[in-house]
Image 1 (tube, rainbow, N blue to C red):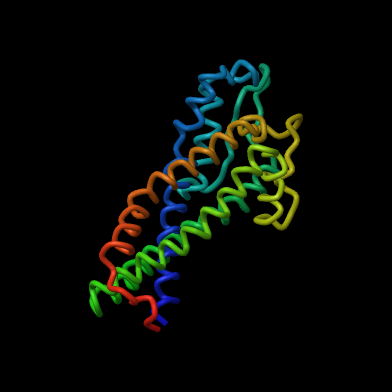
Image 2: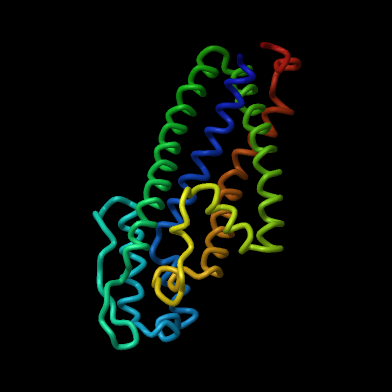
Length: 231
């Protein structure tokens, strides 16, 4: 039972770190606007910088549930129009549901980390902390194996990875947008998503680093001998 709980603790810790790393980067407007500025994206797309920046803010505010819809207007190549069409609106309903569910998982995991951690530390601080460290390290080993695979895949063929990602998390084809008709795909091209995935992975690894070092130290230097043989 202790082994199972410690591994659940490890995965919940990782879920917290991943979910809140995504929130801190993917929902930050400056991540996108800085790249728009660097690549002079507004000129390339035929819109003003103000319209371009506002279009991404609309999406992010909608995902954060601080606005009810993604309706807005832009002037594209001199023609005023709706920022996003109905297909894009419908797709964002799915994206918002996915993000909000991930956020719920993050909050539930945070509560789980506190409860399981408290249980172990109150029952037996020294052995309890050793169990938590071991559970975290086992969970981390699984995650790193997965991340290495994903990293190699992204470097080899990011388009294939991104297609797989969408087919796993979406049960329709609304994510298949056309750059000729859908403005969203133009303001979120593949290179930005590639930068986004890389930045999130780096943030996750940076946050996991201190926890991993402490867990390794305590597990192999401070843990009671034979503690893991306990049920």
